[in-house]
Image 1 (cartoon, one colour):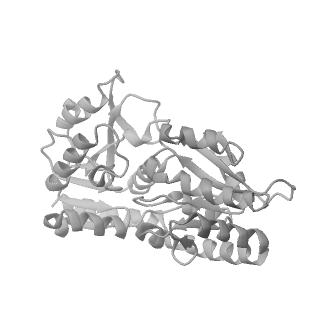
Image 2 (cartoon, helix red, strand yellow):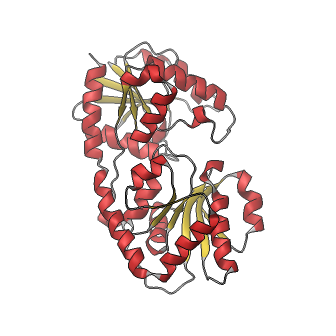
Image 3 (spheres, one colour):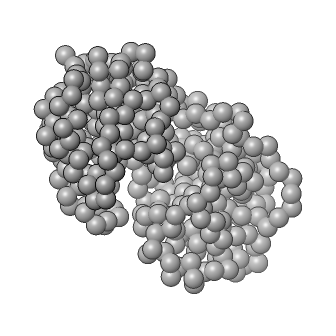
Amino acid sequence: MTIAFDARPLKPQTRHWGPGVFVSNIVSRLSSEFHFVGVAPRFLPVSGIEISSWPALPKTGALFYEFSPLLAGPFDIFWGSIGFLPANLRKPSVVTVHDLMFINGMDQERGAGFMSWRLRSSLHRARKIVTVSKTTANDLVERFPECGSKVVPVLNGFEISDDEVPQRDRREETPYVLMLGAHHPRKNLRLAVLAVWRLQKSGVNVRLVLTGDVHNSFAPLLIEFSGTVVATGVLPRSDTFRLLRDAVALMFPSQYEGFGFPILEAMACGCPVLALDTPINREVGGEAAWLLQEDPFAWAEAIRHLLESPPLRQEISIKGSSNLARFSWETAATAYLEIFREAAK
């Protein structure tokens, strides 16, 4: 059986992000069962994955995806790997929903109205709808109860090699908490900044290290609290893991996520996780994440406790390591195997 799929997450600039990691893991693990053919604008090839592509012309990528003649090719199922099915698709399909960002309007991004309409259309046309978490499945069914019978939650996997996890460094330096990017308003950077600033004002020697892209809306905040935040910009994966290894904690105050890979990355590096108490953080973090309300004082006190108690950090680190066992790409791929077979009937 041949499965055509949306291969856009495998572009070089995004293939190491959550959706790209997800797509590559599912395709690689099921390549012996199905013939996968990716559909995407032309980009540097991915080893072992066949891609049918079109020229990467400016402002045409979305249009080609919606109406590409490649969709008339000989395949049995189309897999919308990041939530969308092409407008002119006329074959059986499966769609994977990573979050409901365009529906709930959390980030108020340009074009969200159109993308919301495209997602709704995809949900109603798909034979099977897969979500990356039970939380996202619940949110989807609540908003689209008519799709409930088609929804199947399949928890994302997680995998990290022993070589990727660095050994703890004994260097003496200013203690820091870490936040992995603030590329959307919902990432709630202000909460993290205010928590660390409160500690600094009380005489605690600590700083907030911020990696990755930062949304323009946070620019005034970074200027105002320039003595509190160190922004590194986008870092290689290995450097991010080294920062996680030596951090007092990962701060994850995001108000909405469809999953939450940073939580698992931190746990893999032995880094305690402080996260906003939301349904998805409860699902992904389990009993290993320290969940907090949206109160800078509470976050400041949690950081203080971690700074003052190495045994507490060790206890949370051990719980985090145990939590990782719940996330398996093999288990996820087995679930997709059955979903694809059912959708083809």
